[in-house]
Amino acid sequence: MTAWSWIWSGSGNPRSLRNRWSKILRLLKAYGISTVEGDRYSGQFAQELFRKCGISYRIAERPKSELYLDLLPLLNSGKVELLDNPRLINQLCRLERRTSRGGKDSIDHAPGAHDDVCNSVAGCLWMAAQRQRKKLWFFSGDSAFGMEQQPPQRPRRARSI
Image 1: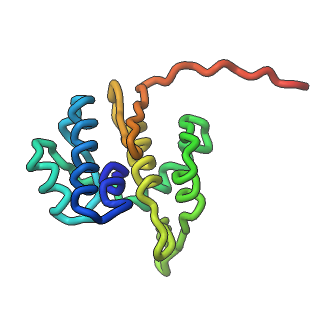
Image 2 (image 1 turned 90 degrees about the vertical axis):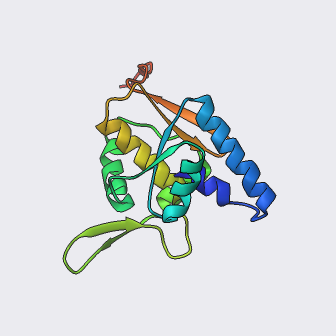
């Protein structure tokens, strides 16, 4: 969940953390969001913080490795376009695919690397592809991005022959 990682990035100063947490809560309330979905990264800590503020925190259905595997066909088919966000692109390009002895693929970041933004984007795009929602929101830094259920048609480019 990008919003969560954004709270903890930067200074570990308690005042800075409170300010970041306040911004996230204001964004959630401004858009009428009462439920967030995230991973098990921080155990009960994140869930408890959201619960104290009246926001329900659901554990994501799918592990991030499966989200990354599901993201590839969405991108290759042209059903989705990524934001031109250097941090997102960098994290996606640095993901590593490993195959276990049993033949199961797993995708994750390298040791010491990060995947908070691409994990959030992969999760949001998977949710949008699986669920019929009027609007799906995700957060990156100070911005909130919405994804319409059916995005407007882009004008077709003229092809030269």
